[in-house]
Image 1 (cartoon, rainbow, N blue to C red):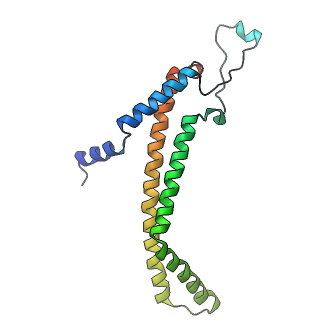
Image 2 (image 1 turned 90 degrees about the vertical axis):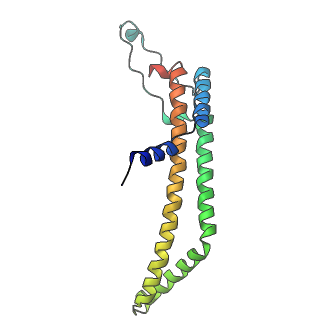
Image 3 (image 1 turned 30 degrees about the vertical axis):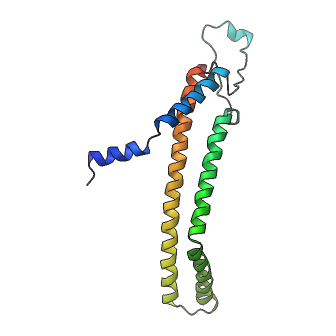
Length: 170
């Protein structure tokens, strides 16, 4: 049964910390005030300047919105997830080796020799289940790292949008 306390505790642990939120917003305000990222705004034609309503402004291309802070966060996440992947392979290397060797044996037994061996297939299925469990656990941790980085970027872009001279008009 889910109680309100358990759900609130999970939500509190999942949110971005005060220091990370402050740092992201500080960098966003600083970059926005400096005009980073550079957003090229086209000058309106003469006939549109005479109109009272301003013309719609096209949003910038996504590649223009990669700032040093965004690259820093993306690189940090990529490094952390690759370290998790390397740690998983290092920790489970014996299981992975057995799984690869057993997969060759099972395929040879079933396809080449056409002699099914249920015990070999059951052993292979057991090891595959262990591997999938380890991978799912690593994947969920990597997803948590990515989600936290997305929260940092959301704080950053919110602060940039507030202080940037051109993005506020988009």
